[in-house]
Image 1 (tube, helix red, strand yellow):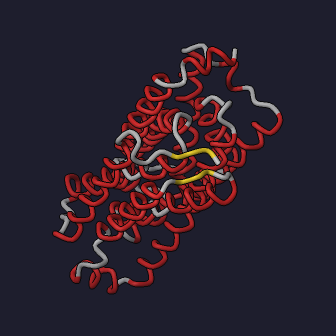
Image 2 (cartoon, one colour):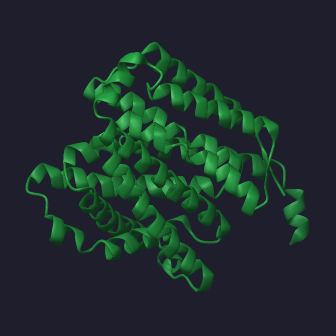
Length: 311
């Protein structure tokens, strides 16, 4: 058994990395449209989270049964506790993020939320002994700098607009920071149990959220318009049933450092979607931030430039 592993360690590992990169890019691009669904649904954040979990769980269960993966859903011991813990963290992450969107904007909330790769790299190095090469640190810092520029906070007009409603805006910023910590925890925990099928991980997280927030639509109200149901269905089927599985499949093929930077595809897409759908234009400084993030992503994507070594 060990001889076979050693003889095939070259090319398969490279192909696996490539697959993981493209899976994360596809999942991130799809998630970049989530803000539109949240805004158009117009529901309380906790109600939105519950519908995402409920519809997502149904979509994932149907997929698993249709593809013969039913046995993968049965978890035992530590794997079960990890799935439940990541489920609770994901629920808090979604609730904070959805609440932050109307207080800031889709683009601003998303890019501030994505400071979380810094937590992933730092906590991964401290607690999981993930060794990060200097190029990895530089790419991450460059991408983070790009995110700061993309928010528009360094643009005088955008900063003035934020100051006029500083209470709500700062609350949104703090919500995004809290959500980023929750999502960093999800990433770290998921990487400690790579034997769990991404389908099982996604379904368990949705089930945990659906149970934990079962009271939300009863107390806070059900959607009153038919269109809202369609947007909420999309959150479950597209942004959870599809994107969630794709992202976890990509994560299982990559190290923590590469995961951290590839997750910038999500905010990049969100900024573009905000521009196209709602006409929120990007200034020169913001465009510079987008370019800086793109360079950091490309640097990490190139073989040998930003690999993560095991500690």
